[in-house]
Amino acid sequence: MGDLCIIGKILRPYGLRGQVCVKPITDFVERFKKLKRVYVGDNPVEVEEHQVVSSFLRDEDVILKFKGVNDRTSAESFSGKFIYIPEEELVPLPEDSFYVHDLIGLKVYDTNGNKIGVITDVWLLPANDVYVVESKGKEILIPAIKDVVKEVDLEKKMMIIELIEGLI
Image 1 (cartoon, one colour):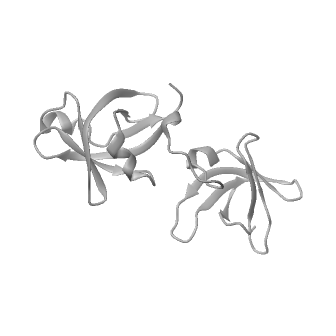
Image 2 (cartoon, rainbow, N blue to C red; image 1 turned 120 degrees about the vertical axis):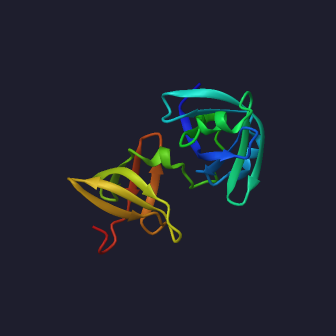
Image 3 (cartoon, rainbow, N blue to C red; image 1 turned 30 degrees about the vertical axis):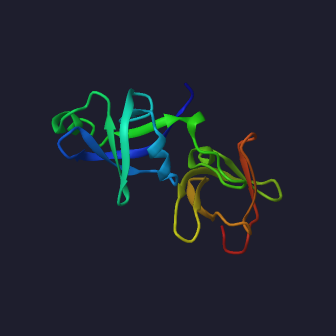
């Protein structure tokens, strides 16, 4: 098994038969309907494998039932934990789209080859995503738009940006 990627957070028990209510942390909520197994834990290192018996979408949440969890009391122990899947089970993305975990840690350079910094966070905002770049002890916010981001090379772990006026 490769690295684990988070796809949801268990909020609380749902009903009396051991189901849990999950807040999806993914753009692909439909994936929950096809899940057969997941890894549950507080972090991706300390997890337990669980088989998914059933799932359905409810408003903006997902209701999951794990094998062997048959009452509300048992389901309560999952509250606040995260749901992970192996990286190889992630949904393929369209061209020029990236998973957040792939962007964190990329070195950012301008088009002249000058190092700007390293991506430490990604803000998912309505208008466009924003890359938070740590640069000499300061945070620089880089809009994830084609006018600014010229190249992303995951193999080389780098991003090239066009410095537009007022960006830095």
